[in-house]
Length: 421
Image (cartoon, rainbow, N blue to C red; front, side, top):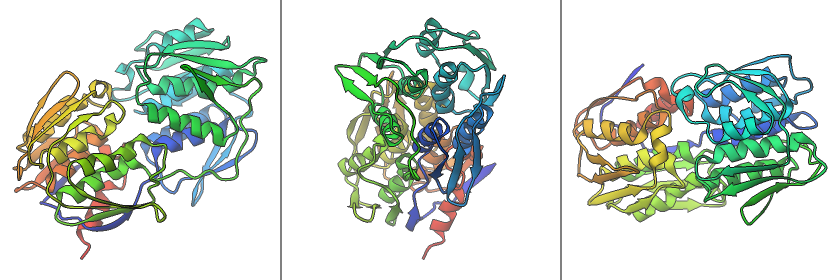
């Protein structure tokens, strides 16, 4: 799919897309609960669909409703669960420990760059505790055996998804003593771990934390709440909020909770620091960003790596220099996002260079335009859309369908906003 943007001028109001990060977590908890749960999530995407598919393969019954998903919890695991993770790293890393805790035999098929993305040290930890997993890099990944033990030690600075996966799994072990995850080092992307802890709490699992040790009480059980609501996605809202900052008109996104556990709500502080006019209505859960003179900043992105591409596009149209650090993990995402963000913005005329763990962007009043690749990465496609607002010539995005991973209606929404008068 190819999309051409001719200096778009979006304006108006749009609803936030549901958070795929929250949806993954609620769906997994619901599939492990003691009773059916209606997870309120008005829209879905490829990653959410991958988690639904894998949970169904494990024995859950999940049906789409007008408002979300009706989840019948896993009653009996099939002899062999054939699971397709698509390109969803969250699906793979969250469910791998769950499979091991259930003692299930499963095959997890992966697509895109997912088979090449790292699984260590989670892989080794699961094998040390009773699981049998085919060699790293296998596709499909074959899993058997039963997770054993009550104390798990893992490096915290690689991926918070590994820790989240363990926390989902440990209540299934039905231990007479608390189950613990001992963290070594500083947690990478800490807000995502907080999101997991909040989702577990909503389903009756109380995670205690003290001196780098996460503890789940003995005999913890998943208890279905009434109808958990997936909040608006701050990651998905970020491109629109950046467009409000660099474009000609204000953009308002509704359904965004400023008190959300989602770390990417930090886009508000980033845009404010850059000089954008940011207005938040906490009661109405709306955010409006209006254009204003922007300037470069220094940014440690270690806790908000997914925001780096759109922030870079914004910085490319700001006065002065922006230095982004702490983003080395972006090299192992759906694409090497430091390299692909640089390639896309340079192709459009921006002044960008990579560093080992970040980017240096020297802003310009306008960019040129041109044809760019999405590199099969949803966030890179949306980054090109942000940059297009400041381009003098049209921007053509190849493989623009990549947005379906997180935001399948993105292009339709942009078209609607450009038609608003």
